[in-house]
Every structure is written in structure tokens, then in C-alpha cells.
Image (cartoon, rainbow, N blue to C red; front, top):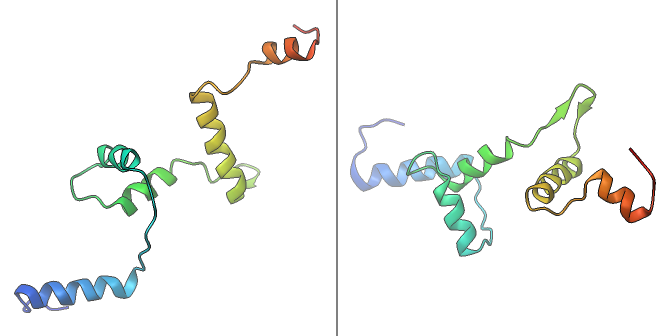
Length: 103
């Protein structure tokens, strides 16, 4: 696209060009979640799409044995959240709960 097109016409043509390659959707998130996401932006005009993709890249996609399934990747995220929020038990606690003798 030539930059000779100026003003509103350029913006319209530019936006049309972008929409030819990207489809958009709407997701529902709470206000507090949106504020948390906004605080994580690397730069002011970073889109939520860019931010969410950066966050998704933090989830491992596989290991030496192969690629993880989407379900397994989701379970990794849930497990990490459980650990961070204290929703886990130590091996010693589990042994006590089950009445097992152990190390």
C-alpha cells in the first residue's frame, strides 16, 4: 500500500488491510481481570491479543518425549495456580491423611 494516501482515507485503507488478515472476537472478562492484564502490558499500545499470546507462550509446549496436548497444557496451568494459591498437600500430609507410614 502506498503512503501517498493521506488522512482518513489512509487510516480506512490501513484498517481494511489489517482486517483482511485478522479476525477478531469478543471475550468476557471481569473488570478486575482487565485491569490486571492492562498492568502487565509491555508498552502502552500493546493489544490484549499480543499480551495474551505472550502469556500463552509461557506455558511449555512439550519436552524431550514430545509435544503436550492442549488438555495437558491446561492442566499444567491449573496445577501451577493450585500450588501458588495453596490448594495442594505435601506428600507427608497425604501420608498422614491416608494413615500411611512413610519417610
